[in-house]
Image (cartoon, rainbow, N blue to C red):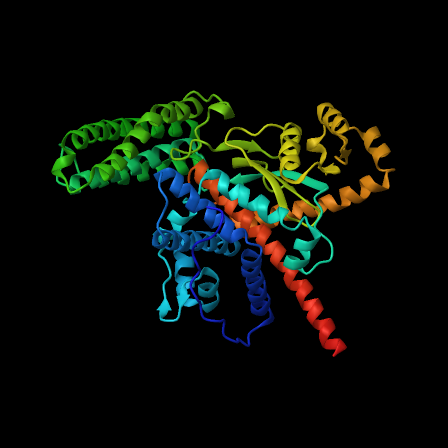
Length: 497
């Protein structure tokens, strides 16, 4: 499908609002975002690709009515995803805000002549995951690449010159996961709550096995956790901790046995409940997931508390619910150690994020990320002229690779004599001075877009959320540039008149 065969619905014009400067600037930027999505054709081409993907999946051409319906759904998903990224709101909060805000209704195309039709929080969650993994990345590169041409830049940003992609500034950071501090014995409390609540759900559906009131297990484990917390104030703290932990293990063994019994009971007699097969499988997987990892969690706590032995970071369980979380030794003043995943970002001179890598495994050193990043940037935007990073990106291999590619090496060297030699180069000093803004870019991206911590669960969902935030960040950045330039032009015309 090379052309769009659907037409967006008419929407009422925005009312005139005499508000504060902050609101006027926010509204002007949102209007520019809408204009960039529309006049560039990026939004329509994106929707057309999704409709073509549906036709290829089903093996038949969609009718005009289906194209119209799917086109509206994809437009809603795209606009709501962007709005989630720039506001940083939760699904529930944004769902309420769109229902109440004329500006958000206008941007998301949910306001009509006969009323407003916002979507629910559950639909918002489905919208975030509706597109394939590579589609958001393609859209980000298409949006950034649209400004590389002078004619397109004058149309989108009111600028006479195109944006440049020849200077690359890179840095890496840690995206913290939404988990509590990973204390070993607290993992047993988490397992108790999950298994006991699953047992309660099964019993409420009429399937019962001989057991004392399940709520008592949670109550007992909480008491043991409180007792464990206060042991450090006692004289023989180590001895008391070991005694309390042995009680925890004994209680955990009892709960584990009951959980296995109820797992078997539900698996054999699920058709006697009011659950569907899918709902039953969700509960079964919830129980089995904890039972599979529980022995390792108990062993880890035993090694550290009873055996008083250290456990390597690579073998630690940090969360029962998120296996892809790692210990990242950052060495920062306010974050010596962080728990999450590594994130690599590269921006161009105007602040657009043009390359990224969210790492599922333990992240390698920064120097090992350079070559792959340059390959992706070259494929999307052409070969850059310079590459700038901090000392962590410097290595002999990186210096050799940049020299062979003919790219200016503006990475801060680790060697002091080499750094003194580099500081005599004015171009190197200017690029390193500009690199300081990249630190701020990462701070803005993490705090204003991702949130601290990132609320999405599971590596795949966190990766998708990061790409939505990159799209929202770049679109907001372009819209801000366009709004500022437009204000300057209007001020000049007013002064000339």
